[in-house]
Length: 151
Image (spheres, rainbow, N blue to C red):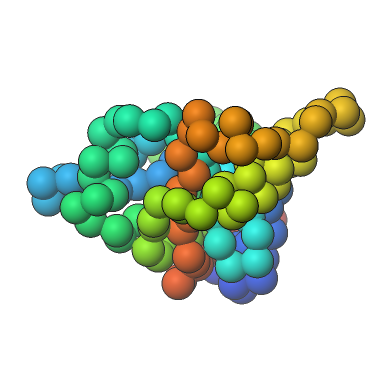
């Protein structure tokens, strides 16, 4: 199964649908990948993270990033194990990632993230206090590709 390339619009739909993905950065010429959740707003991906940490240190040195999402699929067994296949849909977005410093933008991003995951629960909108306890990362999508298994 070689897969079918998707349009940018279809790849963005996968990013929207997926709840989690992998944010990949480059540290000392080596990949560094972390599992994260996200919110897609226009052509930007937003992530929340702690006040300190390795990924923040890396981003200060190198703003290049990519984010991949793979939606759950299933194994397609075959009596010949070399012909096993997988059903999948995946997307990879790449671009420049930065720390959001504007308080109003941080609050807006936190609300977008919470809205995605509230699952029918009411929540009070985020405040300055909430925004002060986390960092928000924003990645501008400069390129996006997608692929799905053959039907």
